[in-house]
Image 1: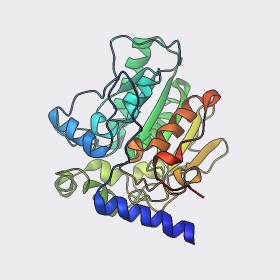
Image 2: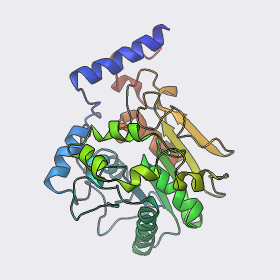
Image 3: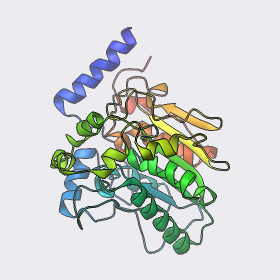
Amino acid sequence: MRTFLLRRLAVCLVSLFGVGLALPAAASTYAVAPNIAAGIANALLNPDVSPPGTNLSSCSLAQHPYPVVLVPGTFSVMEDDFGALAPDLANAGYCVYAFNYGALSPNALIEAIGPVPQSAQQLAAFVSQVLSRTGAAKVDLVGHSQGGMLLEYYAKLLGGASLIHNLVALSPTTHGTTLNGLTLLADVIPGANQIVADGCPACVDQENGSAVIEQLDNVPIAQAAVNYTVIETLDEYVVTPVGSSFINESGVDNEYVQDYCLFDPVDHADLAYDNVVIQLVKNALTPASARSPDCAIEFPWPAQ
């Protein structure tokens, strides 16, 4: 009980003071945004800009043989969702690619709201471009929220499994969620709630029991020869109930952030900015060099 209360206190303090979990300072080639607020601020300048270190004209696969494709979540663009994860991966020697999808208008700050089947086709086209550009046989896919669900949809329903090496999903809407959860997420990004009110096909497609979710949930979800990792937080407020992101099938690695760092208060929106999550993503992409996340970076007291 003491452990639970301390973790909840940490969550409350972060919510009350608006503290972002900054990544550790380090000498690097590409600037890593310290929190989602910084990512949103950067995206405001140009919603169509690629995060630092991504979509480079030339990139060597010598260190990591599979290019990494990042897929943002609902109401997001690649810069505000992956302002930390993308440059961090690039600094670690990965070839990183990202794109925007599901927009109702060009260069919009709020994207990823179009119908899920159309967005999945955009993902398939982008993966083909990356493979052609790099000459790689397969890609590693990392998606957040709807982005994670799109990876699952692409692998299962669009025949993408043969082109995927690793699939890493951060709190994906695997089994759907409530529209209320998506409304709570909209509170994070200015103007997103109006989009929900005016029309968000992706929101409807991600509701529990939608036609899209029923197609995806017709087991099995996980496809052979693809390495699946699903990462979720115990402080999830969008994809509910907690744990519903997981694919409870053989061969899938389902992980809670707090299994590694108990007091980490990361919520849904901040997953791709959290130091622990970023290390877990790297571990999933390259298991041979996996290491434990540094919990001390998150809080000054020991996680015990």
